[in-house]
Image 1 (spheres, rainbow, N blue to C red):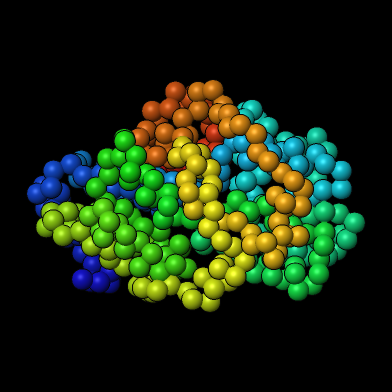
Image 2 (image 1 turned 180 degrees about the vertical axis):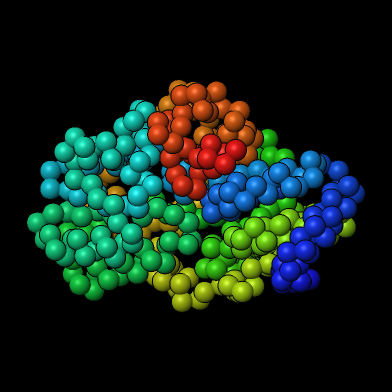
Length: 363
């Protein structure tokens, strides 16, 4: 079945919901996890949870790149922002994320005189470096495989231009090792996955084939419209009811099975897989990207001899549990009491893709 077969006409939506109910009656309670911050916000905004059968539960996993960046890395960046002659640049969300002390963020440091600027892309940071040759411009490269090709292209461009005052602090993450770590954890209790369409556009739908092959778990690469998500939930419940776990690509209008070879070639040219720390998941082998030695002069970790301190969490914050899907945002003792978008305690409330922010805004 195709997405269009249900959503060319709105009257078909009740038919789809009826099929989800039919399959979930056969399976009993099921827990499905999305691992994409855009999915998290779309699910909350559209009210999908409110129309699903009670025995179909949607959980948010480690799909927000800002949220999974550990506090010790933020603390390290905060210290870096105070160095003379250094300008920190990154996407807006990351500038608001606190380190191990509530309220201590890059935006707060900027208010105290630190040089920090928000950019829309790494190329914007490159332009700033070109315009300010006497300033060390550092771009905080955060994200998953979705943003990795653009960051790689930026490093190559900096090398081609010979920009010695530009570097990247690589905070990029790889999706597959994190999902494997989640599945192999002691408290894992998920029956199927809504796989991120943005990531799959780069690595291909086949990048998630390990779910049925290695763990006998169904997965569906989904788009971001409510119709995409509902149809993907239908496919997951159908596979569970029939006992036939597969990897399906619902987002065929954008995602190919093998992904984007040009983008993956860029990533492989500049980066290599390396161990990385994740908030809520800890150290995971080969779950991050590191900059290859031939581009070391544009690697901020090496250029400034950086080393993160010991990980510390803000007392009471349950972002780590929310990221793993073992706790709902409303179950955190700080949610809507101390922690809100105007006064965020942890990154899950800061980011526009965070589960706590979505739950606060849309219920």
